[in-house]
Image (tube, rainbow, N blue to C red; front, side, top):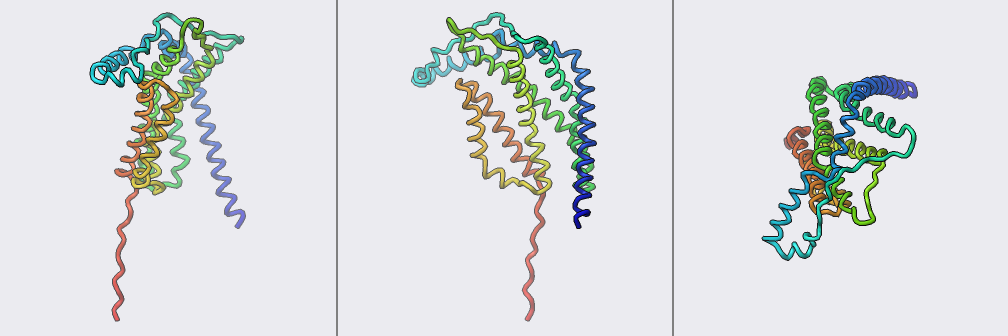
Length: 282
C-alpha cells in the first residue's frame, strides 16, 4: 500500500522537475533575445521621470469640472492646492559597481519570460493534463494563447496607465529642499514587481475558468463575495492618497474579479439535474 502511494507521488515530482527544466531553459533563451533591446525597455520605464504624462491634462480637466459643478467638494478636498509635477529632466543613479549591469539582467529576464510565455503556459498545461478529460485536453491552444495574451495585456496596462500615475504621484512630493534622487535598483525592482503583479491579476479570469471547470468554484460562490472583492480592491488602492490614482488602480482590480464572476457563470461546470425518486408502490 505504501509503494502504491509513493510511486505516483515520485512520478509527479519527476514530471514537475522535467517541466521546470524546460521552463528555465526557455527563460534563459528568452533572456538572451531580450538582452538586445533591454536598454530600450529601460528608457521606456524612465519616461515618467520627466513629469510629462497623460495624467496632468486629465487631472486639470476633471478638477475644473468639479470646481464648476461642485464648488463645495472642490474646496473640501482642496483640489485647487494640488499642483502639477514640474516637467524637467531627471536621471536615475547608482552607487554600487556593476549595479546597472545587474539591473539590465533583471529587465532582460522578465522580458525574456514574457517572450516565452506560451512555452511556460504549455508546460503548465502538460503538468496538469493527466487530471483532465479528453475533451478538456483539446483546450490547450486556447488556454496557452489566452493566458499569454492576458499577462501581456496586464503588463502593458500597468506600464502605460498605472506606472506614470505612480511616478507622477511620487514626484508630487518634490518641494524646496526635497528633491527626488531615485536609485536605479530600487526604481526598476519596484517596477518589475508591479508588472508581475498586474500580469497575474489579469490571469484571474483564466484561473477562474479552470477552477470553475473543475467544479472547485462556481458563479454563486464568487457573486456573493463581490463586496469583499470591492473592499479588497479599495484597500489596495487606498495606499495612493491621490483620488485619481486610487480610482485608476481600484477599477482594474475589481474589473478583473467581475470578469472572473461571469467567466464562472458562462463556462463553469454545470450541475447534473437531480432526478426525484418515484415513491415506491404499496
